[in-house]
Length: 372
Image 1 (cartoon, one colour):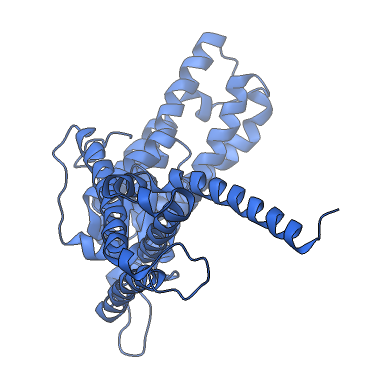
Image 2 (cartoon, one colour):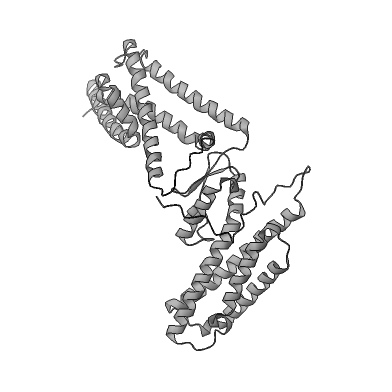
């Protein structure tokens, strides 16, 4: 697991939450909100210009192209960036003022670089490499700082357009806007430590996923009831297995208590496996773990589909154990271990069941005289 970095320096301003408002007849964005939405668009344009310039200078560093041959493009891009910086300098952007001042400082440092101010000049290889390395550091800072302000707004837009249970694969979606994986991980941890930046999303820095949960309590309650219903259904299937009126069925009503205890053992093994995984992640962190009990209901809502699938697997795994190894081997510890390593055991049980099914089919064919 990637260790969470320290929160950003004070020079950054926490992005205002929910900057992109949905306009309705009852409410409309205030002027300050409109300015904040506008600055995000301008910053995205600035990021695109910076990254395009960074790409060209990377080719120069690699020796694919010469600096002088791209002098015209560099000059044109610098003029475009200058216009964007002028827009930022003359705008009224409220809570973004400190960050915009920081961008102005970075821009001033870029302007004094001889590679950008006079790209047609002849530089020694050592000087050119030194200038390019210095600019690369500036570009990296520029791109990350812009992403710190603009990406949470993009994530919120994704959250609003999806239903609970969906997730945003952060590294895949924002690779273009924040190419460096360490920077993306750093920003993920910032979002993790400031959960209110993402409206309706739970951040998992170790997986790089942001899960969507419903903002409506009614929807969450419905999902909780569905999970409860799935548990009751699973118990019902286990009970029904003891009374199935099927000829040659290996289970009977006297096995009911063993079946219920066995299924509960599988469920307990699954829960313990999840808790052990959480404990390992906590121990790998240098900081004390965040124990936000209030997020557990949100997590159940965000992962409702996965919870239902796990409940189904407990039934499949337990019945698979019975039919593959026999009811006499469905003891508490065996069932517990099945639940603890449920995903891998399902593969083993399915292979055993496939083999048994193949043998039964072959025997049936011989009995019916269908074999040659």
